Image 1 (spheres, helix red, strand yellow):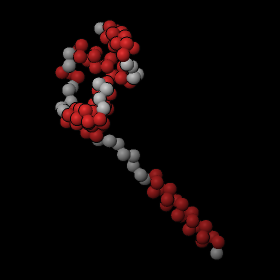
Image 2 (image 1 turned 135 degrees about the horizontal axis):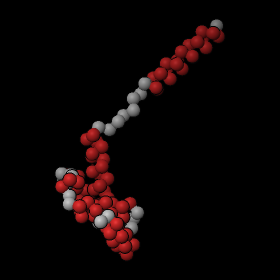
Image 3 (image 1 turned 180 degrees about the horizontal axis):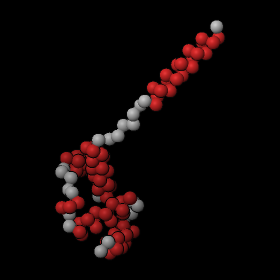
Image 4 (image 1 turned 180 degrees about the vertical axis):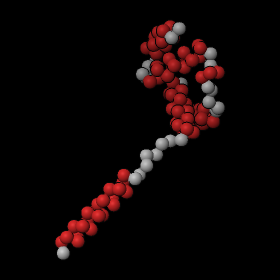
Length: 110
C-alpha cells in the first residue's frame, strides 16, 4: 500500500519540476527597453537640475513625451557634454567638485 503513495508523490514532484522549468524568461521588447532608457535619462536630468515636487513631475512628463534626440543629431561637443554630465550625475558630484570633474572630463574627451 505504501508503494502507490510513494509513486504518486514522485509523479507529482516530477510534474511540478517540469512545470517550473517550462516558465520562459520574459525579455523586454525593444520598445520597453527604449522606454526604460528614456526614463533613466530623464530621471538623471531631473536629478542634475535638482528638481523636486511638482517641478520634477512636470519635467519628467515633458521629457518622457519628447521625441528622443538621437546621438547622430548631436554635435561632438554636445555628445561630450552629455557623457560627462551623466558621469558626474552617477557620482553624485555637486558644486566645485562637479565643476572640476566636468572641466577635466571635457578636456579629456577632446
